[in-house]
Image (cartoon, rainbow, N blue to C red; front, side, top):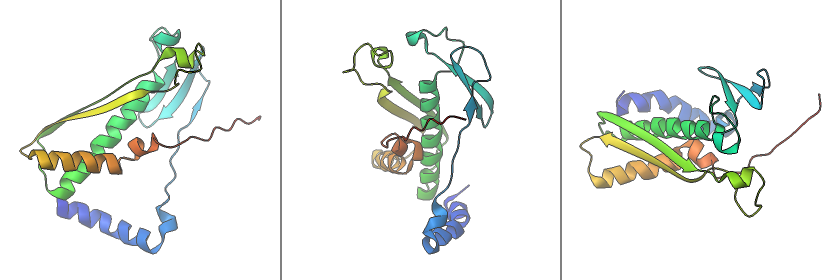
Amino acid sequence: MDASALRQLQAPLKERYREHPEEARTPLHARGDFRDPGLTTTVDSWAGPVRAGLHAATGGDGSDACSGDMLLDALAACAGVTLRSVATAMGVPIRSAELRAEGMFDARGTLGLDRSVAVGVQDVVLTVRLDTDADDATLQRLAKSTERYCVVSQSLNTDVAFVVERV
């Protein structure tokens, strides 16, 4: 897809959202349950069921997906799509790309050993290696625009409302 095709694809959406901003609020969802045994939750992902369990650092045996890794998967995917869209809109040719999202968590926090230790993925770094002829200034613009428009990255800066209900 080139910049013209992207503009043509998105123009009617942008116009609709300008005229009816309420229609721009787009629902997303994830569903999971305890269908599998053990300290796991199975999430029905786009690619099929994924069973998440305890990370080895918190007592897991490594046979289940780690939710923290899944978070970084979502970040890499969203950032990649966003960067590719931005590059397309800017007319920046990219021959290939490799994305790597990395972070750390301190198991003492989630194990409740020390309340002063943060619970959550910290020190997140997304590295994108591009095979492109773009200059450094263009790469900086790509990075800034990707950070600004990546839904998952921006979501990491917001609070989550937790609701537990009896059925």
